[in-house]
Length: 325
Picture 1 (tube, one colour):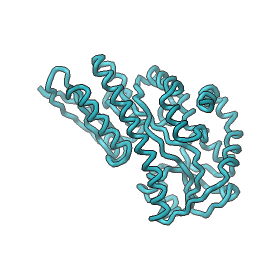
Picture 2 (tube, helix red, strand yellow):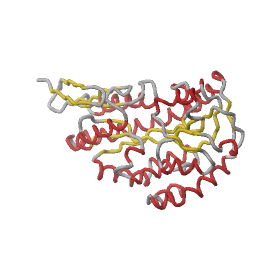
Picture 3 (cartoon, rainbow, N blue to C red):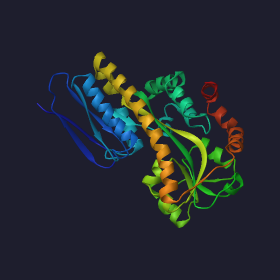
Picture 4 (cartoon, helix red, strand yellow):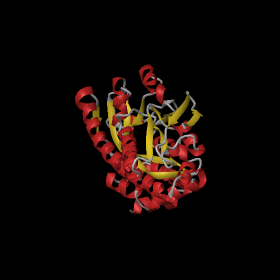
């Protein structure tokens, strides 16, 4: 007898069919907003392979790439409802249920990649994960990320003074808008899919992004300056539906946690390597000018401006815990 799992995403209605081999067999549904060849996409595939191995074929995973099941918000809502089982989130979406996760995207909170790894595999992440599980009924299996965000501009930049007055596309986050406003930037809200045309038409002067997506979205065609602010290490929670997790046997739950941990480690090591390679490709093959600025000066402006925001959002303890590691 076939088991039907039908649900409606924001962009299409899907019906996933699975034929269990035993009473314990189950096919899980994973959603990835990006392509299969990204580090996230490859990690999703690895998670499925490892989970199938650990459960001797009783749990398998079907991954839908390229946002087939909706964007980040739709994926999160479907994870909460149990319509899909696995996905990748962003702190901005999870912050509605766990505001503490915003501590992970405070500019310059991480000194380097090793510091980031210690944090997402340590007690700070454990605390955040417990809140996400309690408030949103979603299990955090680990963290994807490891690439480094910098500033992309249409105009040439050689110092912080050159940033004043530039209209930079940012996520509508108080932390980000406050940080960038501290150096004179005009934060501008724009949908991600509209950025290329926005650069082309001069509606925005730039954006902040990691090298891989500058390549994939071809932003380098419209903005030739890459300012190496290195203000954020990308952090993406790897998520599993709490409803699905509760329905599994203890052995299968242990397998999910193990496969998730391994997939996250695989993903962030791969993403970090691809980040460095993508930065070189932007310079060597697409003519982007990589500009070093006084990062310490930038950091001092940002940290001073963010003191009241961090306090008002109740992030002082977690940010302090991260910085002390």
